[in-house]
Image 1 (cartoon, rainbow, N blue to C red):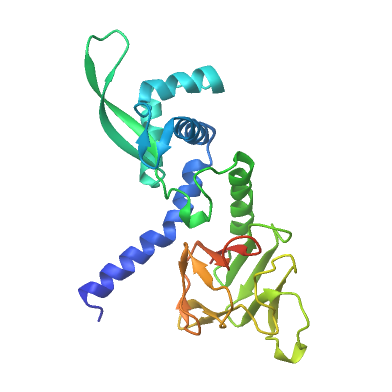
Image 2: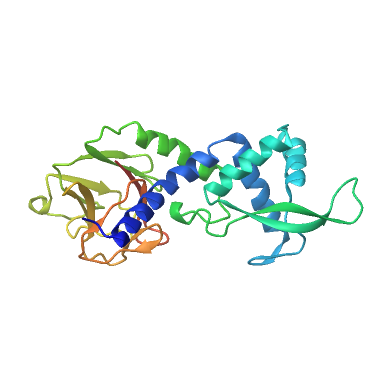
Length: 267
């Protein structure tokens, strides 16, 4: 039997594994995506240092006005509130209670204002200054990945670089080595191997594979095969040489910075 701590861990793991899907679903909407852009642009323009604004953050009525004037999106305050709630649930924005002058009222009024969370897209390996087309492409790749679900495979989709969009189905009976193309010995390869383009220059060669993926005891696992630049899940580096359970809807990054590869995994 599982003790209380085990149950807590399983619940937290379940929440973490679903958060990426919740984030993508929350943003995959014209209104909510526009709100993200509004908050991002406002913060870039008015922020003098992390967490410090030259002016008060935008409150709901101001967001509604910008949606109408700049995006031709006309929605009621109640509908805007529903969109904002969904974005807060997805851990993308934060609600603040502030005092502010509002139209047709005398004196400061208590209103709800909103800011982007600094780590809103950390799990997606995107900075807060994301480009629109970059985030939009994530939706298409996420949908592509989901099309291959059948309950028997782990589906891997490359989200950046030359191999962007390449998708692989790995069966529960298969062991996969992941690395870039190089002078490898085919006898060292497992039954199925994912070869990445050489442009991912900081990913280990398959002859010394960067990562191994396999299924055991009803779980998918990954092992970093002592790579030179590490493997990261949700921006946290995994231990080398140790079988690490893979959560559903995980983003893997094989090495940081330029030359790395981002792979979305679901099953």
